[in-house]
Length: 138
Image (cartoon, rainbow, N blue to C red):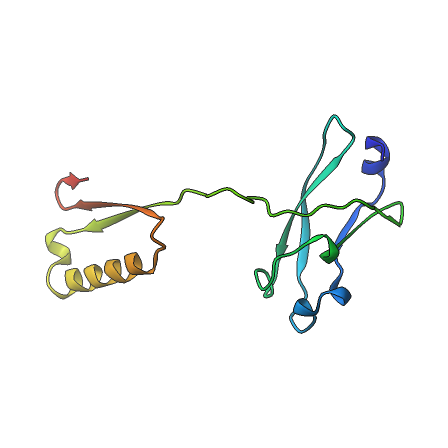
């Protein structure tokens, strides 16, 4: 597949819903081409984002996609998650106003909300608490 021919061809990337029973009873999934790149071996890499209510219901594989060039299916299709085998680090900074204006019930409500939020996070998320009144404490 030549680079110019590939770019010139209307590359259509779509989910093949008929072959995937997991998606048959859900709303349509939307596929958006994010990036097309080429390597020195002549391989074409297409990065897509898939959105919709069935995302994550089952892992997607090559049988869920059809890629065409000049109206003909492209063979040797490989599909893998964008972050396969990678762990993404997530950090959260929680900033709380502890000045006199948030005393009493407002302060208790803010603390309860912060505790509820922290309890909802996965254990791998790093959290930093910054409180402020007249000075900032880290």
